[in-house]
Length: 59
Image (cartoon, rainbow, N blue to C red; front, side, top):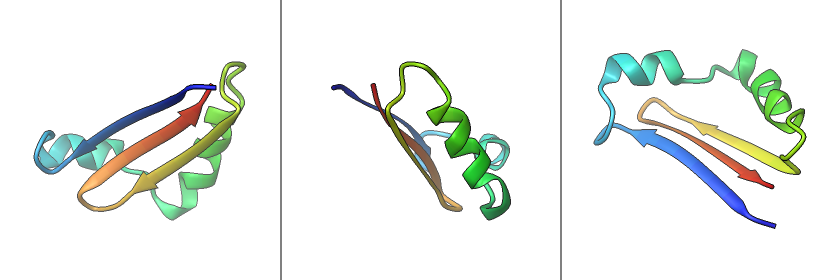
């Protein structure tokens, strides 16, 4: 099992890009399910706040 993380935050990404890549409470469940639907992903989690977005997956 391997853990993959992908993230961006206020230090690495301009606010315009963070706004485009943020997840709302309404679409968070669908986005997490989309990750889980990938054949190689066994577990997935998304953390999305006003300053950062992070995706965690095990493969």
